[in-house]
Image (tube, rainbow, N blue to C red; front, side, top):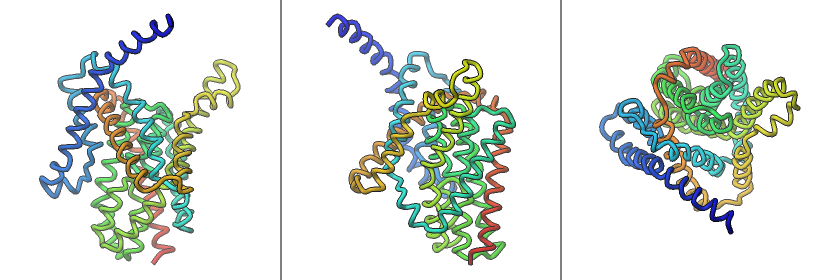
Length: 354
């Protein structure tokens, strides 16, 4: 009884101290959700940017953080958002199914080869340039799989800082915006068929929304094909996240085992993010049909709000000076590898598809 009395005031104090930050997060999230469709409706250019309420939440949070600032009273609540993000990632498993990978047939092999190869190359280059493993993993996931979603999925698994996430999202969006205009131009210039261009866009462009936008900008048939390839690529997300999480954990284990004279495998097991296993478990449940469409839809709405609150926190705790300190090397590496991946995709398309 005495133990409960000691713990209860502590729990109440923590809850009350977190309340201001949670209210601030909720305000930014709800405003972003409300204003985004109205911004898109303002002008065709705004629609071409493929804005989402997630991106608006980050931008709005960064504006607040880097202008009026965020008072210390909000910090405890902002830290709580990491739990929401991890919860959202576990629930995100309901959007994926390993069965979908089988449906894409031989195309899935080509897609997987491009994704895993580009992710490994980006991780290797990030180490060569002495970038932090967490930033390297965020760039590898974001620029090799499906852009912002992949970055969000990998970030907690590698204990990425908020500035790592913001930096990666900025690079992904810049590459995607350029690809949105350059890819259709290349497609028309090379006189690609709808099937060829759909495959080119589906593998070469990183953000799912921009894949579809570029595909349908070329033609309706190309948009449909691009969607199929995009699904095949997105389905690989759980496997690439698992691979990158193990790579970063192994890198940390190598350093810590040298310092503490401890088994490397033991440190990998200690550092491996358990919630990734939860994510994979939900993917398996969805694969074997344990979730109805209604349940998956409800889970998807819950996931969206978890991410929206988490993204609001990222914006509210990201200082532009921290992003600037990361330098241009990460952006240049990301652009180069993503461009090479797109070039190889185009080469394969020209050689093997009609």
